[in-house]
View (cartoon, rainbow, N blue to C red):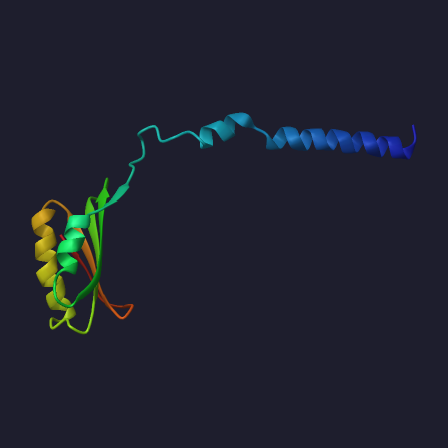
Length: 126
């Protein structure tokens, strides 16, 4: 046989082995399986009522409330204050974390206070 035919045969065999090695369907199916319950899943929800309640306060520009269902059970709150806010960042945290704790007494609260797009304070309230 000529050199060209040998190279063609070796090339075809190499391609077949390469494709067979890359298409291990068993491992692909195992990697794409949904959780079987061994890992905890986390679900995020917003609380529109609490958001409206906090945004109605003087000096509050915008609020984002994110309730985490799963582990750990937390409530993430971002509060953007404006120039009308008379309280300091620490006082805002104290005041509004108490309001949030009333609604979610069994959760950890992660609260961030920002002004003009800059974070002023971040606290975790247990």
